[in-house]
Amino acid sequence: MATAERWVGVNEVAAHLGVAKDSVYRWIEERGLPAHRVGRLFRFKLSEIDTWVRQGKEVVKASHPIKKRLSSRSTSKAPSGKKEGNE
Image (tube, rainbow, N blue to C red; front, side, top):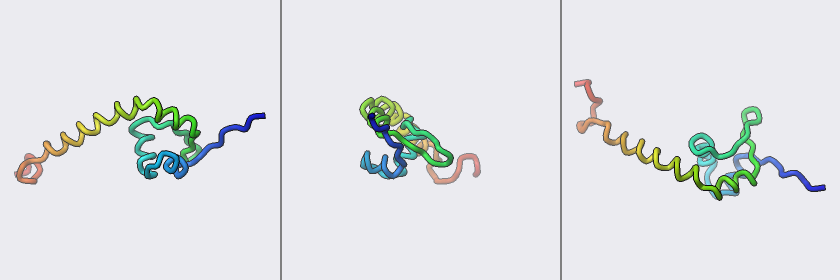
């Protein structure tokens, strides 16, 4: 009888991918990292994580809007450093 793949937590996923825990949480929210909620905790199957990494499509799609948002933030400030319309 084959053994079932065990569920792992955020710490194990971060170690498996070689990234910080904060990156795992951000990728769940912004890039669709496959995660399953069990109460307040996230649980993962490493096989799903590996498949997600190999596909790589979500990472490429999500990275461009983030760059656009960051660049638009820097141009929205008034040159004097004051909020616009408060003079």
